[in-house]
Amino acid sequence: MSAAKYGELGAFLRSRRERIRPDDVGFVTGPRRRVPGLRRDEVAQLAGASVDYYNELERGAGSQPSEQMLAALARALRLTCDERDYLFHLADRPVPSETGPAAHVHPGMLDLLARLPSTPAQVITDLHSTLVQNPLATALLGDHSGFHGKRASFIYRWFTDDQARHLYPEEDHDTQSRAFAADLRAAAATRSARDSETTSMIEELLANSREFATLWAEHDVAFRRNDRKRIIHPELGLLEVNCLHLFSEDHRQRLLWFTPVPGSGTAEAFDMLSVIGTQDLTDSRT
View 1 (tube, rainbow, N blue to C red):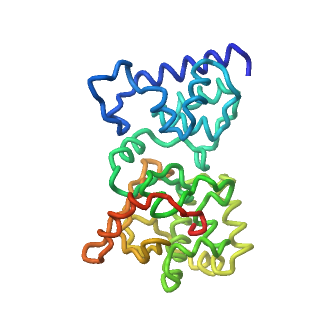
View 2 (view 1 turned 45 degrees about the vertical axis):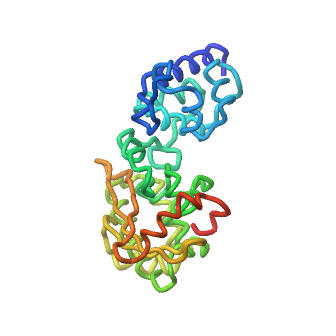
């Protein structure tokens, strides 16, 4: 990156930060706030970056930000798609796929996610790659940020990695497999026939999972919309939840949020999620 682009990148980040109202992203405003919009430390918190690193970026210094960091900053600053593309241009990074794990999350989805602080919620792609999780979703389902490529898709991991199945009781696996296969077929139907991401994943699943090949041959088609699930939590045990889906207009993204099934005893366990947080929880569940 040139010094000029570093300077432009810092100025652009600062301008976007100053336009955001703190209460729009879940921060409480008070009489002592002296800056317009968000503070630098608040942007760093939202993006999962250190304050020192973000300060360097706004000063037009530091190292070239990675694609993952740029995607996190775009989400933290509620950038539009055009603004996100410009941010990647300033950082000399290629604009990521609209459907991969670094895809831009619709600002409206992020706003809704920010308004669900007491409910486990996350935004995923149509291929079930997690784009962003709130802390309670991480505590409930595990941290999905470490998966890349095809493995970012929970559907792909479900049919190729036995570890992913630890999330659900064994007696529920057949139901989940059928639902995932039908959902993938519905998602593929909304994409171009020349879409290589979906066709490549389907071809690989057909070649590597006899179960998937059997279910795919049944031609069931159905988006997952409102599910009742049983989730095995390593600390809290078996949880019964309702999982609700809110789709974007193009069906490429969906907001999932989880509520306890009334009368199941899960409501009391949910109260413990914020206490347990993510301590000692690993990706082995998913």
